[in-house]
Image 1 (cartoon, rainbow, N blue to C red):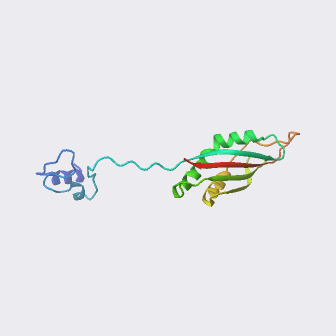
Image 2 (cartoon, one colour; image 1 turned 135 degrees about the vertical axis):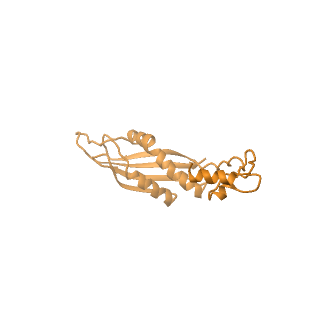
Length: 165
């Protein structure tokens, strides 16, 4: 028999447990006798207040120059792959400022490799701007090509509308 089981057996000698309770009828607290905490039977945990959420839409996407990478493709990629990250940034800020709303403008360049560069984010809250800038630095898009089919870069301005719910 292990030392712990022996100690439990010795501590329980002569005690009558209350059904559903953690303390024997002689008043000893077995959890404290063993140097650990036990549940006090106070009932179910209270649910946490729901985290604030917000609705984010892409209000506008503008291309600077012509390439095979068009605004519909950029909008679809951000919506399907990166919007959840932008929402996390906004939700994190809503904890501090539950009624915060506004626009977030992201200027970016898609390099010939599809990676983003020259990312500039400006909006209504520096915390959200910084968070989205960190995420946007790792965004990947299709490789842009010029009219002749050669690799090129493509610039875009993406405007998000953020509204608390």
